[in-house]
Image 1 (cartoon, one colour):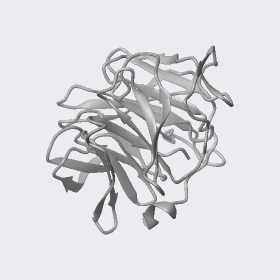
Image 2 (cartoon, rainbow, N blue to C red):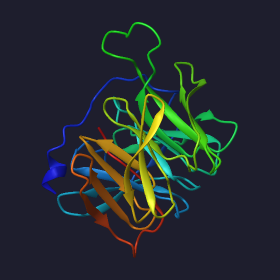
Image 3 (tube, rainbow, N blue to C red):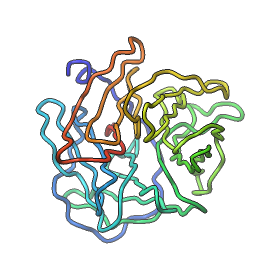
Image 4 (cartoon, one colour):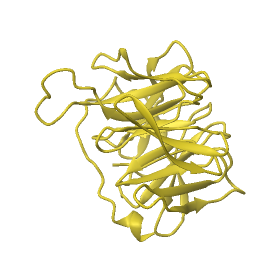
Length: 261
């Protein structure tokens, strides 16, 4: 566990998307502690985001949707009280906001033309002179057909902008590291592969006997869900893998993981 408790998390500003509405109760208060890891379970309806205390292994429910599945989620990098999520079998991106002692009502911030598979925050591509402080962070999302797919981001007016086209078998799972480098995974396939995209070229970084579904890249490590009941952490420098959390009796189709920066 020591490798996890020493992480330094990125905290940056980002403008919110949309407005807040009515409220729903929440089972636990907002607690921005870096020793918590968050995960989603695709098999549940209604879907939830859970938090696991990496110091104790205790699991609790952070948020549960009013109805519908929840496959992928992301916290706003600058305002971690904002939670975004998708179901992977829906065209909508949803958002809720923690308001001191309750969650706001579920809100649609964008509707795509086909299913949205995964979401993640990353830096907007720089086309000219970089702005002071670096490019703004944007919400990215993916669509996938199995044979390939596309990654878009929402601009300042919530319009989709094509960012990258994946030309290989792909289920839509992706993430960015702190430097804005794009990573892809083979999703619920087994054995699985983790890829890194540099200069438009896709490189295979790692192979795993179990699926690599939703994942997050932080501090030179990749934390990933195995589409079963476990979360693993991969050290990119050494190639060593550790099972970080497992509860296959309670959870199956564990589909995404994240930190609250």
